[in-house]
Length: 122
Image 1 (spheres, rainbow, N blue to C red):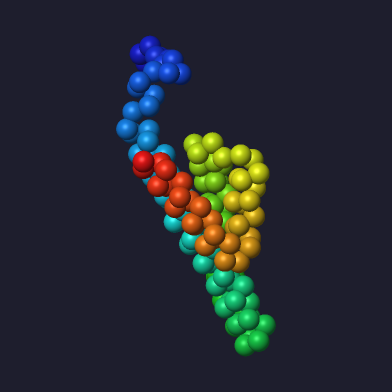
Image 2: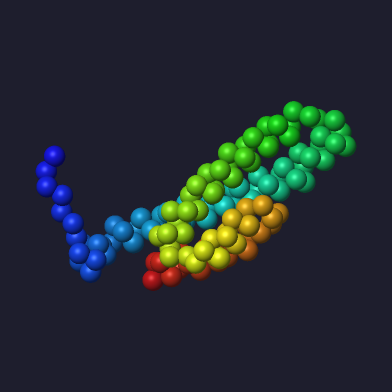
């Protein structure tokens, strides 16, 4: 292995276009994941659960629930690096996590993330 170069905090190489694009792509990926995760929550609560308890379709809750659980884990796991890249306050990050368990809250979060995407592109 070669020598490790450490860049100073104000180095022009730290603020190149690739870092900005990575930040934008990560935020956009999180925004899309939040919409998919929010949709899975709505499907679980308003389609799968009534199908189980009113119509006796027990298997659908397991399938939709497992899918939602995996999406939720990915959402939580991706929210932490995104919050660090975007310099979110801890309270905002907690609200982002709260939005993952409140039906339709992903729509409000989506509008906020779109604003941040526009600022990241500007």
